[in-house]
Amino acid sequence: TNQSSQFSYEVIKNVTAVNLLLDSISDNLTVDENQIVNITGILNWPITGNIRLHENGSLLRQNTSSVTWYKNYTTPGLYFLNASYLGNANYAASSESFYLTVADIFAPNVTITFPPNATSDPDGIVTYTYVVKDSNDIANCSLFINGSFDQFNATPVIKDVAQTFSATYDFNRNISWQ
Image (tube, rainbow, N blue to C red):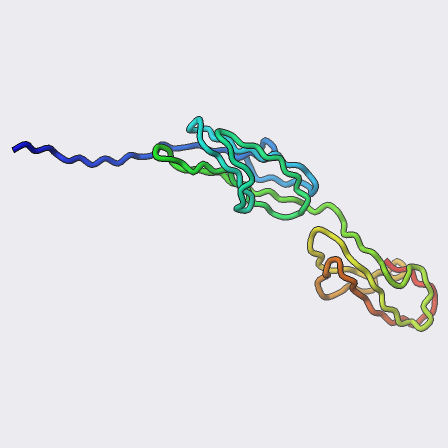
């Protein structure tokens, strides 16, 4: 009889190397809002293959060998950026990730809607109305009367919605508020 031996082989995938660069830096990065960031993914090994860039899990762009994406970050916050190679039959998957922190550098825009600043109040009971606009959540707003702190709102500020302060004063005169 003719018999042959059976052999079993395990193919170990080759190691791959991926680099992620944020503005040419291979590390976490902090930038100011409204700044353009160069996000680059490079597949170092193997020489060719599909590389992907993700931001918070969403695909930004993909290409072979290297991929670059320029993005203007207008909203402050923390962003998770990732460059990945999915691998194939011969090469293992690999990735590199960093965090991008976009700092809020602009003060909120507070519009005083009522009463007009530097107006007279006849009875000392005043309801101040204001609207806040900003790209981030606002923790609180403070009321200053004639240059001195008066009070702050204890509830979170709702952006783009009229809100009020109420105050009673024991005087009848012009009030400057901010």
